[in-house]
Length: 107
Image (spheres, rainbow, N blue to C red):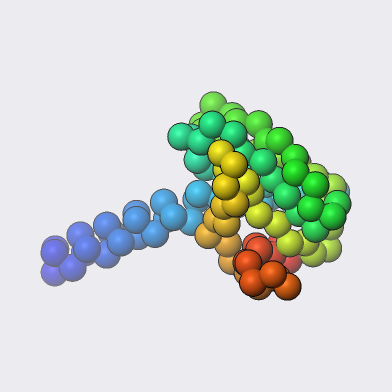
């Protein structure tokens, strides 16, 4: 019984760590994107909201890279981390016309 409880607790902690690496918050007419990669040297954000222009993000004290953009009803996005495309764990994904995947933001 105790071993089973320990394994369940350990699994929950492991899965919650994965889920917290990337998240989106909406505040009124603004979307905040957060990516927890404290070891990264540079993180840029790219989305369909403005035809995939690369935007610099800012790292906060907790190691989260963050950016705010105007809220959209739906958008596709990805990150460029230290010069390489990075797709975080995201709830919804879509394969684009070039065979790559993008995260989808669906409110």
